[in-house]
Image 1 (cartoon, rainbow, N blue to C red):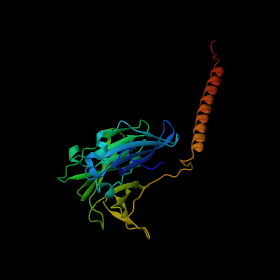
Image 2: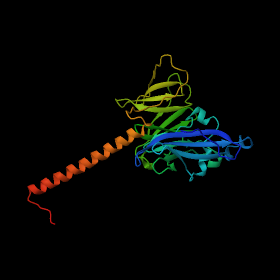
Image 3: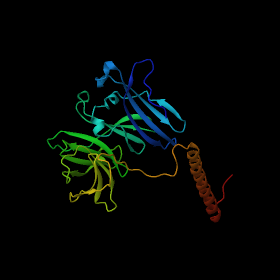
Image 4: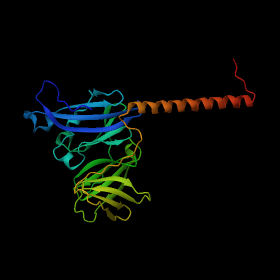
Length: 289
């Protein structure tokens, strides 16, 4: 994958890069999306006048494609300190789409936007949000994924965090508030909170808190217990992953797996047709010519 190159003919340097990786199931292709901002000396402090571009890299074709139809609000993804303290630019993958949060901006009506990029259609969209509870506090939102569902963490001035889960993707009415985290032992404020996984008994949730600790949180009792990490760093980021025996950088293996799936489908259809013919013969039914 090539490095980010500023647009030719301009004295620009790379500002901030947003990115994400996912799978296009329709075209059986792994893809990487990269959104880069470019700044010059004259607009280094003007976040409204960033030049920017969006490109998608296809592992199947080993090539980049520039996305031309980019919504105007993508330029507002970058906000100083927001990505440093929160998502750091990488998108949250749910299904075939990546998700980012646009930080609150005066130009956007001081509201949060959740933006998605679909790897199949290769286009951006806005995700509808839940009706957040009015706690007489200002709030910021962040996105995550929990058991394959898109979730939103609504952070009320670092005092409490509500966790919302979208049970049916793309359906606003399917948003459901799972619980509210009010206080965790030895944690004074919630600068950042992200759900990682639900325990097998279904009663506890593993949370990453403030980039410095992992906590098992019981949402029924409100009790929490820290996970000890021996000799771990003071600050870290936790990521859930699923192992695969197929390396994404081996197109021959990916193609082999695709052919195996197609052969299996053909064999299944052949078996169904043979069964139908045998059943017809058994009941004395013959095909008319």
